[in-house]
Amino acid sequence: MNSQRGDPFVLLDARVTKFFAVGQENRKLGVFVEFFNLFNTANFGQVYTGNATSVNFKRPSALMPGAGYPFQMQLGARFDF
Image 1 (cartoon, rainbow, N blue to C red):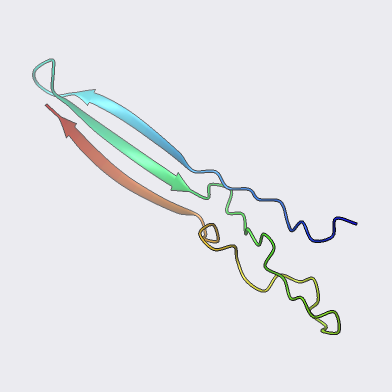
Image 2 (image 1 turned 60 degrees about the vertical axis):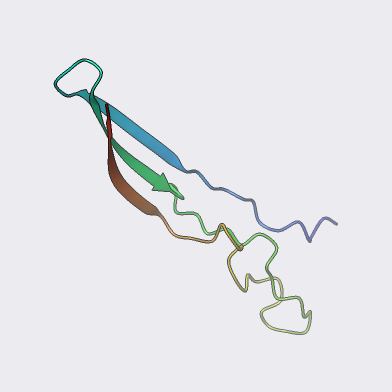
């Protein structure tokens, strides 16, 4: 019963920004770091081998499209004036 629901989906993306005042009061520099798939979780969803006679039955055969990427991080800066 309920055997075709798939694995739990876990995905957390985050962004942290720190602003610094530069010169005049209305100018500022924002430095940020972005994290994608912060917990580095493999999301298989419902992508399983479906042949019951196969030795790989009910084993994941691929990652979930659009959410099957490993941990990534990027740095950046933004200047507001």
